[in-house]
Length: 314
Image (cartoon, rainbow, N blue to C red):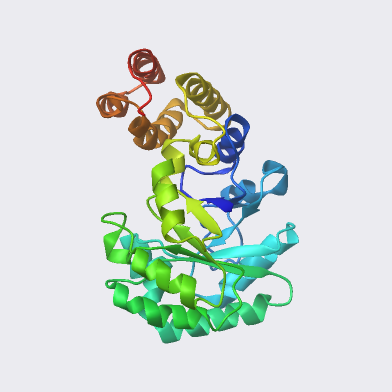
């Protein structure tokens, strides 16, 4: 089995990836938060820093790109190739309203003729030197769109098709559509990877029991909330407060060193606690207090109380 870690904009950048891999079992592959090509055909310095090989030693990362202009994708991918990468991932899954309105992310699924032409042009530009994978939703408004979408993907030699088994309008609500994933397992000409609502060992085992042909899975919110989830799946151990506290403290220190200003650090820590609070008994109540913190001193007092008074949920 191959384990991917999903991209999270603003969270799963190189500092987080390296620290998580230091304290917990590392994923086989990390897909980066998406890079959006611009009209200047240049990669933003922050994005470039995130994917620099020297900032990702001993990690297998695949840079993700988002866009709807093949020429911009090809130009940016070629710059990534010059950095030493031989594969990119295309984002056809982001459900954000502002992204979809620009026919990017999941918005590109609305026009299959355009999507086919876009993929053709990207493959023509990169086929001789780069592999291409896609992370996709199964439709925009209805799962009935999936068969036609998959037919388009089947026309291209993707290194992998990562399927978030929801339509765009679902965002992250409701249950993933396992019928759509089952259809892909049987009908995709490309290798497929499952993504969606794997929050526990039980979730993972149910998926594998239902779909024993599954060769790879992408862990997202589940592994972000519980950074030891992959260890639990592999039977290597369980999350405990001591390691979680060490992970937190080193992350806080690292952000203080690399980020500018107390408010920026505070914002970053609040963002990650949206997920971490889920693994603590009574974590929601403390997350509200963390959210109201106006200084790192106040924040640290709440976090100290949380680790002293809350247990890790079974």
